Amino acid sequence: MSKSTGIFLTEPDAARLERSIIEVWLRSPTGTPGAIELEAILDEAEVVPSTAVDRHRATMNSVVVLEDLRSSRRMTVTLVYPGEADPDCLRISVLSSFGRALIGTRVGDVINASFAENASGKFVAAELSYQPEAAGRFDL
Image (tube, rainbow, N blue to C red; front, side, top):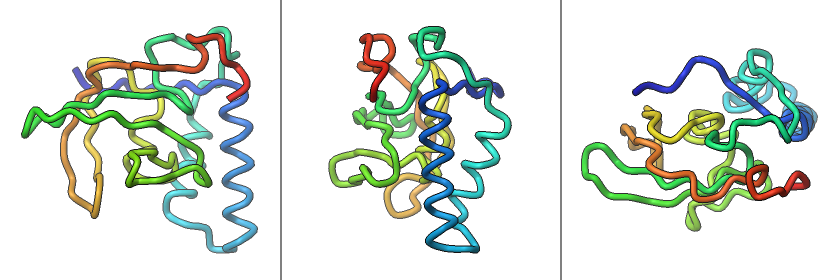
């Protein structure tokens, strides 16, 4: 199964991501490729109330178990805001190509993206082990 073309964001995620993009633009008038691409994603996204988001869709601060389709190895990543990223701990910024591909992903979706030093690969979202909204956390 391929990732659907529709991207869904919660209202708080969309607002916070918009603020993150503004901060990038303030620091760098030319922006960054990640910020520019994320802005395009925000423009196309369907924004829904936190209580209405699909509980099987990766939102900000979701923990996703990914399986590398080449090696069958699994890794668990957390999708985070730019200032919270830590690649060594697999806390993936939504501004990275991998993070942008991950936002809105559902279990079973295939992600084609670069991860770790520009190594590209195909990953399947094998499990959504935590989604804040599904856990009743609408404040993250």
